[in-house]
Amino acid sequence: MANRIKVMIVDDSALVRKVMAEVLETDSGINVIAHASDPIFAIEKMKKQRPDVIILDIEMPRMDGITFLKKIMKEDPLPVVICSSHTKEGADFSVKALQNGAVEIITKPQIGVKGFIEESKTMIVEAIKGASKARMKKLKIGSDFQHQTNNTLPKASLLDTSPKHNADVVLLKTSINSNIVTDKIIALGASTGGTQALREVLANMPANSPGILIVQHMPEEFTKSFAQNLDQISPMCVKEAQNNDQIVSGTALVSPGNRHMLLRRAGNRYFVELVDGALVNRHKPSVDVLFRSVARYAGKNAVGCLMTGMGADGAVGLKEMRDAGARTFSQDEKSSVVYGMPKEAWQMGASEIQLELSEISAMLITTCNKMKND
Image (cartoon, rainbow, N blue to C red; front, side, top):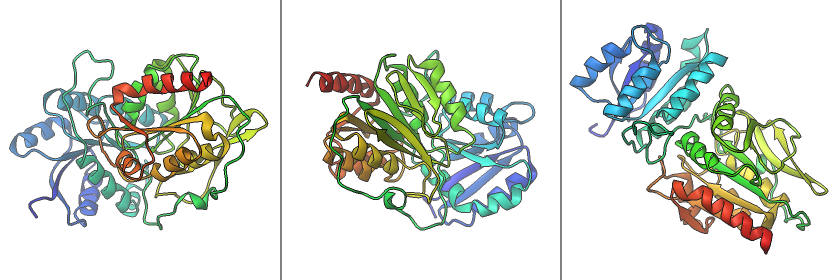
């Protein structure tokens, strides 16, 4: 097939290379064209045939994965999927890789790798297909946000073969509560390309901004490191959400991986609830779940924005927010790494306006200020 996605696997484990190739080759749309045990060998093989997507380990001999990733993004950007271990160090390196242009994360255990890869076939195949759609640009030397793909990066989706549920399995849709609370809430959702996009938005939000709730599709091992990284570059306080965290001005809460995050209200106090439950749109956390809860408990006191990502998670929830009186926006095609989720929102009338990534933070600030004065 002429249009098969050409994949190169770069990992110092012969077992990982072998099993990953076998799993990927079961999909007729993917062609594993090369393996390499380290980046030096990979560079030589790339001269002969350029892959569409690279699966890259981080810790390897001769040249580490981060150094190789930076080289790729400076010289000839292409989508890179990081294959990282379930460790604190692995999470920190993976978040650093996302900052430098990687578009996906695949996690792997330290033991039982073969069985894990075989059982995670659907997730891995979808990650490769999602990465292949990413629009890449050369790394800007000296840029605060390093590489980009129009303004960048990743997603680590928790896809599996279970039925595709909607938000009803976590939170049933009901009529909107009367709005007696004046505090404003901002809700953001993203997937592929979202980590760098969120980084740009939060870097430009003032320290006294309304409380922000964020769902980024990402494995649970990485969301804490991701939140800590955002905290370093944002005037706001950014942290991984914990159950019953109160939502206050100047604080942004990132949903932990493998938990749905919902907005709740007690009197005039907003707080978050973290719940387990079925995957929604094959994701946990799901943007639809967050947005539905915001529609119910904040209504016209909320602002929502659906950003870059593959699939449709968040589009229905954003429409529910708009129907409840919230202001709603979405990222435009030009600046999205993958124009999937925001496209769905725009096409169903969930979003009032499409914005370039560079415009989102200013629009959030302006809109919230106007709402306070109305």
